[in-house]
Length: 144
Image (tube, rainbow, N blue to C red; front, side, top):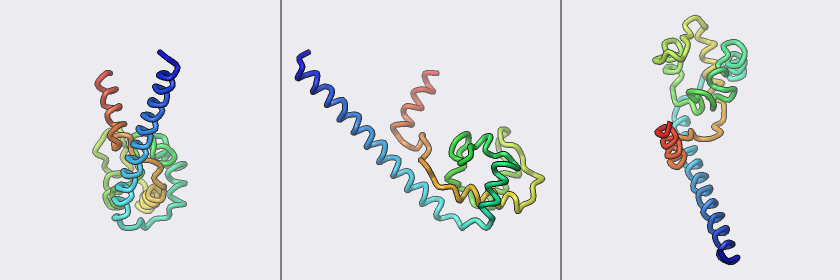
């Protein structure tokens, strides 16, 4: 390959990579806007977010499955798309066996945990909400 063609191929590769990066970035921004709109429609939480953080991290150790920011682990808690009432009902009687039942904690504790979760800013949309990343995830799962 001549020197000119090699340089052109490198430039085209960089431009393609930039295009993909911009596309992913635009998708991420669009998804974030949708997620923020969904959570903005929820009524404000009534609990104490600062106390909720203490309960989330130290008392109930929610971070062990959901991460300290609620955005890692499984499932992601942020953005929280449940109402406070739906959250309390789910935490007390989860529909999955992976989630422990929190039947004994006082309602105030769970309301405070909910307020904390709702106070956490959204860092990024879920990977499967970005079409390009969802395609990659789907292909990897099929290959496994």
